[in-house]
Amino acid sequence: MKDWRYWIAEQRGALLAFGIFLVMFTIYTSNHPAGLTANVVQTASNKGVLLAFVAMAQTLVVITAGIDLSVGMIFILTNCLASWLVVGTPAETALGVAAVLLAGLLCGAVNGAIVIFGRLQPIVATIATGAIYFGLALLLRPFPGGSVNEDLADALTGRLFGVLPASLVVLVMVVLVVWVPFRRSVTGRAAYATGSSELAAYMSGVPIRRARFAAYSLSGLLAAIGGLFLTFFTYTGEAAYASGNAYTLFSIAAVVLGGVSLFGGRGSAVGAIFGALAFRTIGDLLFVFDFDPLWQPLFQGVVLLFAVSLGALALFRVRNRLEWFG
Image (cartoon, rainbow, N blue to C red; front, side, top):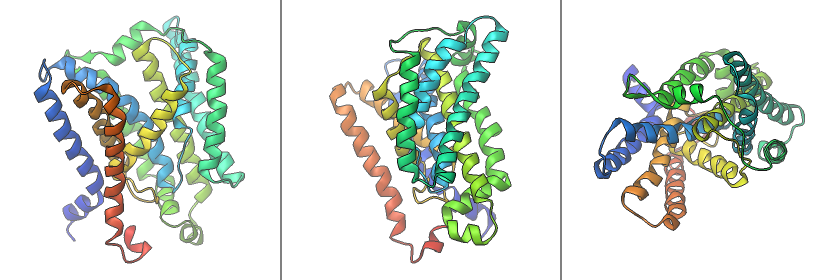
């Protein structure tokens, strides 16, 4: 198979998610009263990157054949923490940002340590830790409140050169700085191998524990970046249980829609990003077509079912497990 054909086969899920997003966004902008303007793109970008960061976080864990049900709560916890710390002088703000990112990294590391050394199923471990993280968020913000450095918030949620959404630029930078090095590293390849077949990876001498620990830790870091941006958008912190659960569920939908296999060992964070952007566009479409808001959960459920079905269809062509990862 030629290189370009292999690349297309490998990125099939991401390309499909991109195509779905492009079609949906085109329909959205074509029917929006303002049309395709910088303001419309900026608003859509600011809403989409929140789910994109959480979807990237979920992707890292799913690749190792796990699932993280605490990403939404890490997202909420870091939002509440940022509303306390990301304030004051530029130096104080920088320290606050570093502390929030470190907190997310630590939460992910705790998840990884429990799964690896406690030998608990990821779904059980992350349900428990998610409850703990929400409890901490509730301690920090029993009521919505707080603030954030407005200059930094405006810079990261505004537009560069009056056209390009700054949040989208940050998302691309995070992909280049976090995802690409991880994907190309020995640890990243080990994470894929672990998700494909843990037994085969172990017999081949692959550093399974290191790969899983890195995946969970970086997952917490990415969720924390999302929590920071939520604070930048809202200028406040809120321990919203429903919001945390929604982002966790939507991140799974975005991951599957982006072509990442829930069986592990296959997929890309880039595909999950496009899956997140496509999933977010559903609400925008309901807005421009003036649908009753009560219909939104129904449409999101239909899209989630459609996304899972797309992944299941590919399994019908698989004769053995190795072929699925080939």
